[in-house]
Length: 113
Length: 115
Image 1 (tube, chains in turn orange, cyan):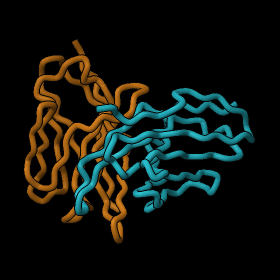
Image 2: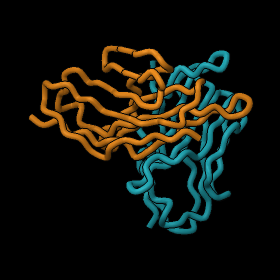
Image 3: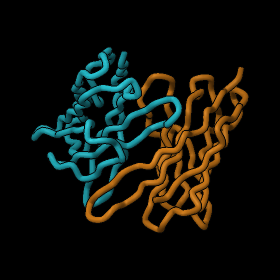
Image 4: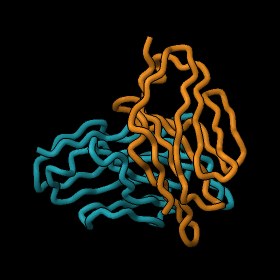
């Protein structure tokens, strides 16, 4: 099963871009990369996902390298409310129609004023 | 539309007891997954249900079980509770079409404390 590796913690100044890296070197061709975040004591919140092209939505941008072995989540203008644990997850497809997400320990992002 | 609803929000049980947690998915979502989250282990996958069938299971002992009803609501049960079962239990639902998953929406979780 594909696993992800993220730095345990990062800091970012308010108003600056936050770039969160993720390594998923064993990802296979039909597996998606998902990003979620979790603010203390709440359920994880979906941010963005992608297969091989870069993606952008109202929350963030996702940059996936050409070999798909790593990706970066970009929060263009971080605010204090973006302080959370960010999870990079690879969607694993099992036989038949089975699915599950493999979760790492995530990156704890602290946005500082 | 309403999000994923988990009840109860908080629960305190004693060792040896059993507990049932409930999850109501987003309307129209037929896939429901359960996770256990503890500070040291992160999110650990418990099981996933789709159309009343368990289609995937994580590495948890048989004391952990679940089911899904025809309206897609799901319950999980933990029997013979142990102190180590204290955790945040999260439920996530998703819509799927022809094998494409449209992303998971999580509930706020049930905080279980075993004393």
